[in-house]
Image 1 (cartoon, rainbow, N blue to C red):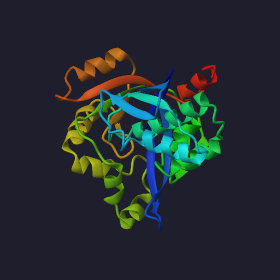
Image 2 (tube, one colour):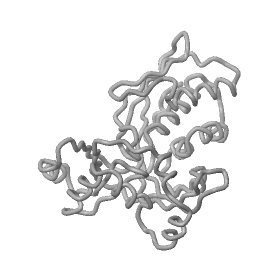
Image 3 (cartoon, helix red, strand yellow):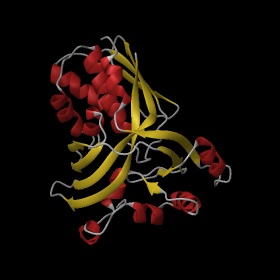
Amino acid sequence: MIFSSPAKINLSLKVVKKRLDGFHDIDSDFQFLNWGDKIEIIPAKKLSVSTKKIHVSQKENLVTKALKKMESFCNTKLNYSVNILKKIPIGSGLGGGSSNAATAMLAVNSVAKLNLSLDVLENIGKSLGSDIPFFLKGLSGKVSGIGEIIEPKKFSEELIMILFPECSISTKDAYSAITSEQILDKRDKLTGNFFEEWVLSNYPQVREAFDFISKKMKVNISGTGSSLFTKIKSFEEGKEIMDNAPNKLGYVITNTINKSPLLDELLNSGV
């Protein structure tokens, strides 16, 4: 069976404080995209995880780690072949790894009839990635804490263009680079993305794309980057803009949505 693993964008992102455990509390608006990866789940002799188009090693893949934790929790073997068709670039700020893990967890829970509650899956997932609880819930909303507090919220569903500069940004590196002083300085006056200035200062590929689009319309960075997004009126407008874009700048045109397509797929899967 094949399941959706959608990307997300951060409509806004504020870092509230650095915690004693080394993590950061955030205040952010997350919205799903009607675009992302696809995950195929097939019964097999043993658990295996593979990717196509964009390589992620099985050992380092969040999907492998999440399913191994589910095996330990249930004290059972999850003998499935999990094949991920990757479209979401690594280090793009679109939540690809967390989305993959959440989709695999929900799909295997359903296919294998494990009957694990959403709370249990969230407890397993949040130890691996702070965005995983959001993807497990499947509804756009306000995200706070380290990502585990999610208040469902509907935003305008828009036609947008996502831009992919040819670089990858580590979320860990981005958070490690900020200081408590910077957080305090921006906390009460920031309205956009906390990381925008840092990304533009450190990644010339993102700066080039940002400058190119911002001459024509408002553009935002998602998460800790490297992807950018902008609202457009039509596919034709987006394609016309990209005809003159810098070399090696990839893009996709899609819609923002308030509900993950995975939720309906799980209801209609018949398993």
